[in-house]
Length: 388
Image (tube, rainbow, N blue to C red; front, side, top):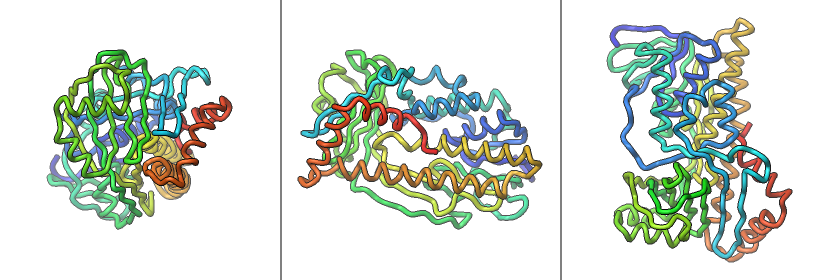
């Protein structure tokens, strides 16, 4: 890129949420959309991280014509087996409410590669600008400064992640919560079929969860105290697999790690604004949550769904992308995401500690879910959906 370009919509950030937004916008009839990302369309290096795409998110991707582009890269989740030390056990089953799957498991970079490939097929090289935004100026249109030139945009969508540079450039603050926890993520291959079942083990130091990525391939997210997580990350041999087997049991049989290990600190954040004139924040640029209950990426899917709907409705009335459409998006998504932030924080506080006064509450929650099919079905349906 050299000189200056003007586009209707610029999506800053070529991760999952940004690429889904770009694809959904084009499917909705917005033709002049470009994605700006430092990595461009190239494949990302393996990280060991995986994500669960909830059934509600899958329905949103279908509605926007995107699910068919990535479905072969995911693996269904039919059951979720949740157990807490001394607090009981509950099993959620897709068959109990007559659905195809509760969620789908994806390796992070494989899903991103699928979305990036779909975007490249749809728009070709003209759909990408490889580079970083180093400055942003408000105005009509907004002006973005990159290393090799400038961009003007009628609307900028900031999807540049948890440490969003565009959020900072716009002067948007955020509330933050830090946890004395970190997450260890990696992928294992194993002896036995995982039977499309998530195993979630709730412990005082944090949950450990598996995510089916194939019949004999599973993603691991292991939450623990930060010091313990760092020590585990340095223990890459058989001892790590032995520790993991103690936590999840012998259902998977012998395991071996087949990806890098990543250890990252956990925290939550929520932007004070989702929208300014001709600027919208979505995905991790707007919010971040504790990984318990697999909400993070799915909240971003909900953001895209609402934003694209509001922009399309405004265009149908002859309005430019911005103004009241962005204010409606902000009102809807800030409230919905705040509820999910409270929920994940509350679940972590309830289960990730060894406080004796909370032990009866932990047993009561899992016991009620295990014994009441009505309550369990309600919990399944709620857990599958995207906050709206």
